[in-house]
Length: 305
Image 1 (cartoon, rainbow, N blue to C red):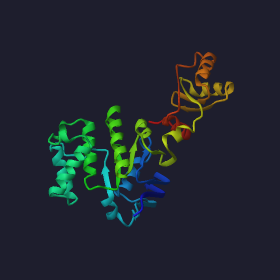
Image 2: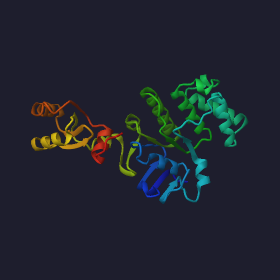
Image 3: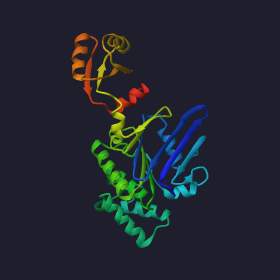
Image 4: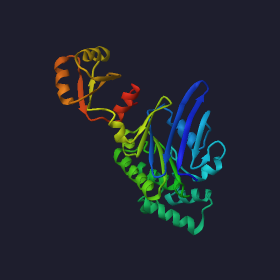
């Protein structure tokens, strides 16, 4: 068994619509690899393929030494999967949910009881073990979902939009839990998300847009591809103002909806100059360091929505 997921030239189509377009990447154990993209970017299709729910139109996937097309049963034994839509029975207690799921993997008796106790302690929910799931907050339910996926000690943990519906604080707590699993148990963690702050806490990020993998790198590496500051100008006449700015200033620009995204050095000084030059064309302006959203817009020219 090797220690990687290797995806090569992965392509998938629904009829004439291409959902994934020649995607290749690798992920190693101990990493938290985030597939970041807006709705419709191909994240869900890729997740279904990696979790063995469907096979690709073309290309190959190797999960820890097992080929997805021929060794599906072997792969499933290695996977812990957390789907976007909750899979808990809300009328059962936390412990009952974990116990019944453990039975599906052949766990029982003292071994299962010990494993449930261990996971409840690890995820900080042992004091809620006898609570009915429907009484738990969204963040606590997600912890139970992950504990359930970890019952059989998988080598790979796949999570589809795990922080969907969670507030910023709960998303950070979730990221802390995943980091703990990656570092202490050397688990390969791959997740999909459209939350930029969640991607920022990952080991590496792969950006998806319209089925294409446009870039891969650590969050800092990706943000470093933008030199200087990012200035965001809101206007009702983007094309005209962008052309006028180009004629007056040597800056890189992208237009999305009613916004002009500009890369420049000494952003605060540039803001003073551009506002003075076009006072009646600018509705609002913001300046700051590059974010993952800025990187996505630079590479794709599309808004992150």
